[in-house]
Length: 628
Image (cartoon, rainbow, N blue to C red; front, side, top):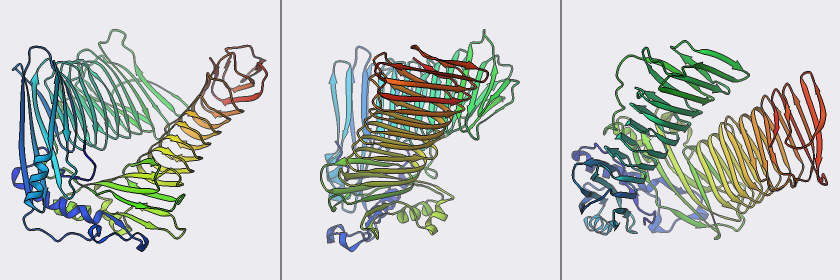
């Protein structure tokens, strides 16, 4: 598969042929200055110097067409694994699977571009009615490239598409459709089978004419649904959801976390509606007369119709719900045109040996950070940059200036930064841009990450890890060192980690599973879930629920204090602890024998299991405590 050293051309599906050469020139000019080591101790060898290449009047672009056809007697099942380009799948009346691919490469030399295009392969493996289509790129540097697919299949086909850094279009299929999309637009139209999709990135999802609904798990996408029937489940984090033109029979559940939800209801519709908005800044605005209620930071609005064939439930956290009467037929969002598509450029990975145990600091403004721990004392950094701006010349200029700098700070730590300087930041404030950083970090290096907006993920870390995020998602897995994680708006997830964890969260869900060290959580306006803790637990939580699952035993003292929320705890009879549970303005519901008192406004209970080696103290104000 692709080695990661090649750089993709990004151009929209509707790009006119006359502009092909222009895109190639712009992207080649943008590659080289994007990743710069700024300390003499890390000076690059001459062949890797970070100066921009001389402009070439006519860079060479080569295209190659690939076509494969397969006669079918049954219902085909296609799996398409792709990156760096578009995938279009449409149904036709023939009992034939037709796969067409356009391979495009661009370089400063014709022979280099031609060699890359010839060595790029579209591999199709067939076993009966099952097809696996995989794009394989050669390990050749200093080449821009993309591969676009146009695939025609029988109507009854089943389709699976995994596509990164490209758009996906599927239309007219009656079989099951599954899509995994990262950093690309998705269009799903006129589909008769079940649909399941996961997607991430600041791109549009357009779903129209889904006759059996579907399940959608999204992050950061702008989701538009219309003319949908059946069961529809949508969950979107940090992105809007819009639902229009409800099907005659629909049961929809829409969850928006840190993003608004818009529902358009036909006039005189008898839809059964249940809306809940929770958290700071949450609201429900409606053209309809609804039964409303408020409890703390939770707002509800309902219209009950037990005979309705249209049911919609909306749950929004820290953002608004808008319910409007629909008067006209909606117009589906248009495809990216040549003027509003983003410019994109990758950087060649840059690797340097660092001092064993040396500290690494990563700073990001807008975009994701992905870190993989490695056993060698080698730091590797690569980046992908996007800029949406008009006119095209301004997008090119901004892309060229959007650098990723690597330097030594005054303390001797390695600093990796994609934060623009103040002058560039003021220009970027009026456009959209993102920088995705991908790093391989030595396991023994302490790591400090500062991010403003995006997802931070770390897989394996053997030293202390500190992450501070203003808005986004934090995910850490298999960490051996001490964790200090802060997210001021969004989710935090820690999985299978050995060290102690100090967590500060807000407006999201904190999830810790299989953490062996002591856990300390301070959170508000969200939920906290702690599963299989291996040591002590301390939780201070405001406005939200806390759930502790200790089915494999209690291995340390636990202190949980919640204001305006519930506490749930799952334990078995083999737990070894002394329990205290106090609920002010709520109730205590035990699953084993507890003694205590019930007074106006307060319930207080205590009890023990086995030797009571550990102390468990649970307390909530304006909430309930439930043992199960």
